Amino acid sequence: MPSAVQLIRAPGLSDAVDYAYAATAPPQARLVFLAGACPLDAAGATLAVGDHAGQAAACLDTLSGALEAAGAGLHDVISTRVLVASTQRSDLVAAWEVVRDAFGDHDVPSTLLGVTVLGYDDQLVEIEAVAAIVD
Image (cartoon, rainbow, N blue to C red; front, top):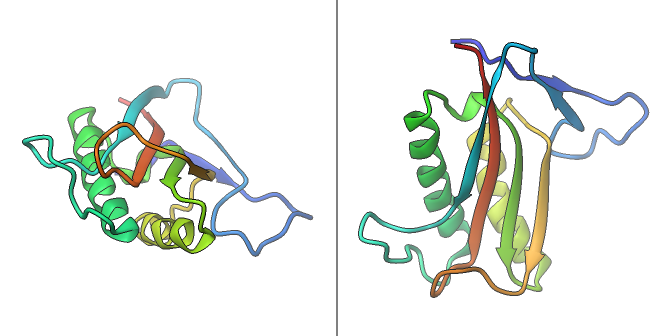
């Protein structure tokens, strides 16, 4: 199913970034606001302890499950915010590369942030997202 999301390239801005600079959805689209996807298993235990890339992958699984429950998929995401508990740029990049690769050509506007702490024990990554779908 085609996505309602239109990614916008901004002429004159750097093309070295791994995402579109903006995105829109048509007026008839229904927005889906997702809670921050955490790297938790079904019992609530933190997955991939100590592994930023592994936690990013686990967060994407959580995000995909929440999107599916809303009748959407990664191709319907209109923006993301990736939170990484670290002061090391290499840790942020490790998490970002997993997210970027999962979205592939659907390179939605995204923000990557280093934060001091996240909500669950041993949590290093969380992914927030908004999706747009047309019923």
